[in-house]
Image (tube, rainbow, N blue to C red):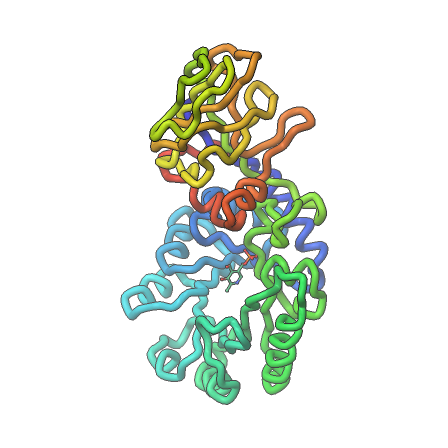
Length: 351
Ligand SMILES: Cc1ncc(COP(=O)(O)O)c(C=O)c1O
């Protein structure tokens, strides 16, 4: 197999069990949008339910439909904005929807769960006006199934804006006692007990990645995904010989180069050019030269490996590990983007 994303469903299950225990008595909603952050939405959803998630959340109606088509039962929330056509799909999937305008609620059928959304500072979906949000609650009547908001800075060291969002939200929810309340993403669920309310909506943490961008082990979370390939070719490079487009690597001394058949067409970002390590046959070696669409090269130094040796881009071997967080930090992005970016060309293998 030239490139493979190996997904440990047991890890997702255990991460969910851990998050459910941390959040209890609040319930756990597992966020499986964007194909389960690249892990595969349907298997991730099943593992999350096995780990104690009582709700599932997705961003789009199509994602809810995919879960139902696979036979997944239980409550599903579509968190994103919905066009009229998308609303039909969401309803067909028996999903709950998010609302923040009365006209939208007026167009809803009799039997659908409605989650009213106050924008307490995210500045994206939801209404900033608590009175409008309350009118949505009234318009929903007995269809009201939740009061929600979303935090903009729950992953930042400075909690002042998170605290401010919480204050705004608490003032509003006090008007509607008895309606289930949910607000926290993974970061808030882990670090802000006051934000847990009746349910937490965890995405990144269920996959064993750290919402605070450091080390998932800090929260007892296990990374669920490994990205592996192999060394397809090994060759000697003499001083002055180069590897890859643009000759972005030129050997300064004699060395062994390995070619690994995975590239940006598989989601290995080109910004990792001369800026990543792999675990090749268990040894940490640098990626050298440009990331091309289908291949990368690594510098094996004085120790060549057999053709066919394993090359791990994300994962742990022996005492070494490469986290999605490490790749993200190298290129100035977040772990979310690393696993979401693994291309469909890479088969997922579930264990
Ligand atoms: C509205 C909403 N709630 C919860 C989440 C889950 O966030 P996280 O993956 O940080 O736990 C997301 C994801 O972005 C979201 O958009």
